[in-house]
Figure 1 (cartoon, rainbow, N blue to C red):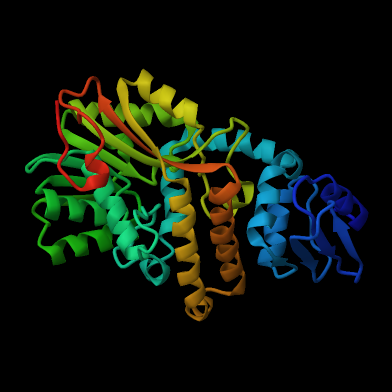
Figure 2: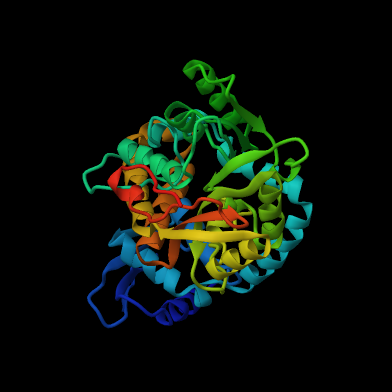
Length: 400
């Protein structure tokens, strides 16, 4: 437990915008030289663990002990930029535990996916777009709605893959199946989607049946580790928002599995959050409460692992601010459904998800997180696009 004086000393070490603290005993103090950009308001003495300040701050907010006034982006940016101070000894212990947990990869991944994605499709339907895309959208124009931007994201990905009628497409981590449905309808492909979530698999199969695509698209509740080139072959592959669940320790196995089922010269598009620093980009509170087992990949290491597994990097695009805009839309939708969320869960759950959505938005605006789209070929691509103009002018790719 931290005393007020010890906690005040920790706060005084933080560098960034000025802020104010209203303590539970009525005392008010300012930190930093600027006018306060935000205020931390303690309503009661928190059960604060000096060994894990980052998690303790999140828990204090979830429990209603702590509230924030003012600029959320400034507040969360301050937290992100002072991780070395706020990540206590337990964060380092957790890193070791995460590595040990991943030795039980199959069982642990299934548990972790169920923790997040099997909350219930109705919950996600409240605040995602109608097609249930739970990943960064692509705002090609500033006036796009969330639904339009998510459709644009899918089309942007499918255009990069240069799909042709009759090709087989693998979607590793297919969610509720929106990308595969669009690929089949627009490009005439056949495909297979993988998910570990029972909720996603059931809803995705129902959507395929409704669209009349069950004979061309299959959604399997299956681990990517069970992929085998002996039984499945694909011309193209895609993975959107799933690689964050793999972890550095198993990254080579992930790329090797995709390579095993992909035809030589086949294209693979990886859409994933990345970090630009090698000091641990994973937020301990997010890992504990939102994405257990999640791990933000370090950009240079991702590229190195892919290359060592036989993949050639063709294009790389940053959609960092697109993800910030996506999260702003999700948060607005979530706020509109607060009463429904509160009725199904409780106030602590509402505050937990509010903090997660706001914190994630701030992290993409200025906290060091990025969203990358990486287009690889397995070995040398036989006919790569001559240029990238087709990605932005709506035309067909010009191949060599």
